[in-house]
Length: 276
Image 1 (cartoon, rainbow, N blue to C red):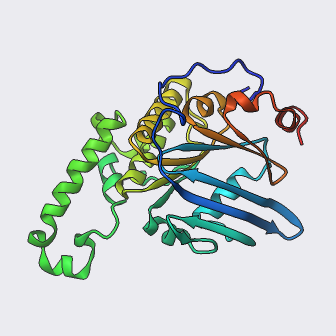
Image 2 (tube, rainbow, N blue to C red; image 1 turned 180 degrees about the vertical axis):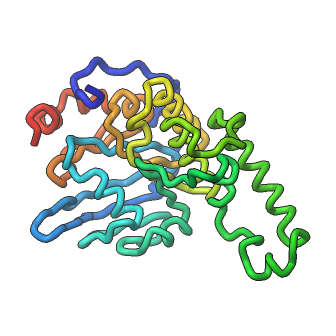
């Protein structure tokens, strides 16, 4: 199984680690986060920090509260209580577009790409505050927004090259494989110039080769200083990619550390193998 905790530890694909890579102060602080749905405490008193330039994984059995916690951090779900302090701003209870403007961009397990737009068009429509989309842009014409548009096309091509999708830029999104659509979703997020990416199961539902390609792309982004917080069931990828891992079960955070450490923690084994 993809998230069998007792698998043989995965061989690292990168020489970088939290210990030997210089990272900054915490860009995200989550304090006593609670999300209740009636009598159900889907997230129950979760607290953690994410340092700038690191990748942190949220793992746990189905129903642990991982995706709900990610939604509450990103503003899609309103927390019942707690704080979500991102880059000095408390975003708890504020909508996702406020988080996005602050530099926290989320990708989704089921991508939101526009099927009948090309890959390039999908990236370009993700650029915020484009001159050409404003009334003044319409009135000013290409002289007002043409240079900016050309610059964004160049940047989109750089991102597509990095994701190894450059040859697909004129293909319709509907013609791509599931893994390629995941990469387009990441590319769309990068066009918004994020400080941090929130990723919900970026490797889910794709073949092993493309899953490793997505993993390598995310690892390269992290090594370049982009901060990542991801929910993922593919524990081999989590071990190779993440500097630190938080384990949730029953809405609570029950352990944190590197995957190599967590494999021997009895409470983690109980959560996965005991099904609680």
